[in-house]
Length: 442
Ligand code: HEM
Ligand code: HEM
Figure (spheres, rainbow, N blue to C red):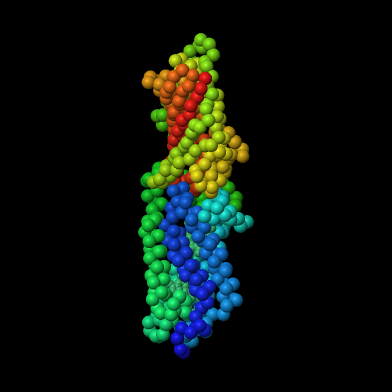
């Protein structure tokens, strides 16, 4: 059969454009899928994986419609190889639809519902599927990915074989231009992009490494994995969830045995004894607008930084006689932001702040002691997500007269408050550092 590149021998430009768009997107998607860390440190990559994957689904549906509307050029080979080529094409189409569909099923059935915002912007719904099948979808997704790689290699080998062993300009059927150059460049590009993304992100750490790296969190994570391994009935999953909850709390209590926490608790108990009788009510201070309340927590090898936009409180304190101080700070948890809409949504959910049930966190002082040079240590009680516990804060005061600048820090054991449970939090450090700075006037 003649293989000149007259119009009838070529795919339509729309088909060619979609073929290569999807090929490039798939190369990146695969590389991200195999490298993205499945804990909090991989959050952004998983979001990207979801976004590109859904894009591939939409492009593939478009491409199939295109295929139905515009006829493909006649087949170039008959017999067994022709049959093999057509079979691989049909299977590639199936792969292009089933890979993203099973991915979509995974996130739809996940125990922890992380909303999908395509490229951080477009909300994408989840399918109403049972949680119990989550593991099955994961297995299917992975298997389909491997089958896809095999199909891709067969497809490329077949195309190159035809180009170089049968003569003619076969590859130009599916590439711009009439020569073999553009097709070979595009092919090289697909491989390079896949390789660059894969090695750019770096191969996934073994789960075992995580265990040694992050101690307690990794234990909770492994526990999760165990739970996921037995999704046989929804009843069992619930039991596993409960168990997991326990382990998280236990871990919180263990953490309470660390030196700082023990000191905090001791100080809080000693507080009423230490407090001096007041010589008069301490002066009140008004928190001025423009202050900041930030938080940061380790996430894998990185650090997540966020802030609260809405908080306030009342301060009554004589800097020279801090024993009489009474400080109460309210924080609107709904104003927490990490600068990423999807992550912010997750912060509001049951695994983190559960904002709808407990919209406000409060810290109230029990005793404030001066430590010299304008430095103070304030012991108090933090109420967060339905848990009240001793929580120390350190701060410095600068300025004098009726205007002061306040800057300080608290290190909070988030597990003790049940903030950050489940898979989405598995790479997060246990301590959240809170920094604040504001001006106050009398
Ligand atoms: C993940 C990457 C790829 C996917 C999913 C894919 C998928 C497909 C599909 C489904 C078709 C059938 C078109 C139809 O008749 O409806 C096709 C055709 C074709 N592909 Fe790919 N392809 C990929 C990468 C490549 C690469 C790297 C090359 C270059 C070697 C290539 C070369 C071709 C050629 C020449 C055709 C026309 C086949 C013919 O009709 O005889 N493809 N591709
Ligand atoms: C053509 C599209 C897609 C391809 C080729 C693909 C490929 C992959 C690969 C290779 C993995 C790693 C499998 C493993 O090592 O276990 C993976 C994991 C994953 N993918 Fe996709 N994916 C696609 C689309 C999607 C979509 C659309 C979503 C969600 C909307 C998604 C969600 C996930 C999730 C959540 C995981 C992690 C599963 C786990 O917990 O191990 N994927 N994907």
